[in-house]
Image 1: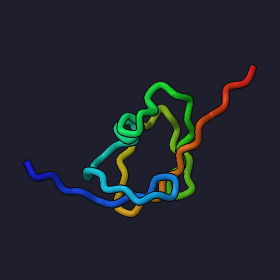
Image 2: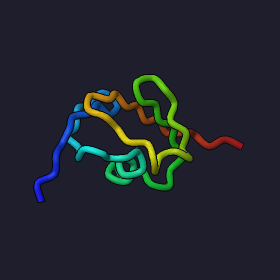
Image 3: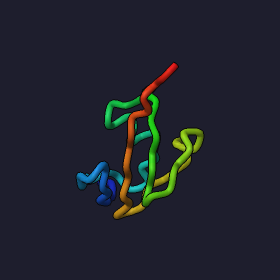
Amino acid sequence: LNRAHMEITVNGRQQQVEENLNAAQLIEQLGLTGKRLAMEVNEEIVPSSGYETYRFRANDRIEIVHAIGGG
């Protein structure tokens, strides 16, 4: 199957990803599953509860920040 791709920017680096990629899939591809993260897309916070349903669009600018656990 030939799947369509699009370009997004993740932490300042351009990446080719499949169209309709969701936030949970991106985190999995980056090897960050299960880590505490904060994600912004085009300077808007995406709540972790919405990662499964949030779909990226071409040219989105994504910033992923590791949340540092404190006690």
